[in-house]
Image 1 (cartoon, rainbow, N blue to C red):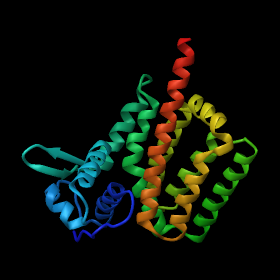
Image 2 (image 1 turned 180 degrees about the vertical axis):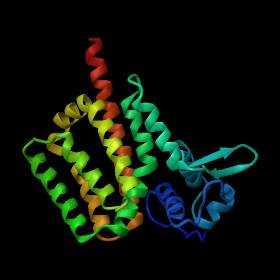
Image 3 (image 1 turned 120 degrees about the horizontal axis):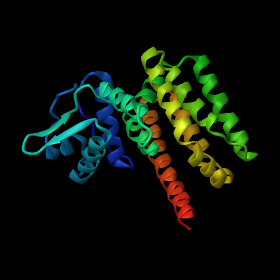
Length: 243
């Protein structure tokens, strides 16, 4: 894979984006060993710290695996691993629902990059309609989880891949059943400055502009921010229960 020097802000996020792009293009394959940290930093034109931060995040997502003394490798069959995680979670009732963000970070940035390449004019119109509807409802403090899930499902539909669509339907179903209470509290707390629609519009505009790298990065940033907000609300509710 021909790595390109990086010169813009949020360096480690763009290192992540290049790894995802290499996977999507087939230039990086499961089981492949990445260049050593020092060499990768030189290829990308960034610091070793930025590379280390990116590789740590990718390992948390399940995309790469660090083997001490051997190097960092692309994890075999990440999609099959994701399916196994979801199947296991569906059969249990005690798991932390916010843990869904981890497999979503593995899946959705790639789905969003593909949508930027594959979305039809009808797909783009539907995404814009959903974003506009959410913005309107935010102004009236009428947001619900449906608008959020509809946006993510519309991106999956824009991939024109039945397997991807079915997988995201499963994720959405699990979110709706297990994250409802947290989402209601979050929507109430954030209604006047609801960050979701701002992030969703940024994602939509990247898809509309056919910018796969920007779309991938915007989705990853959105998922990281959403998880942080959910964790904060979860802590608030837990504190209230303990009072």
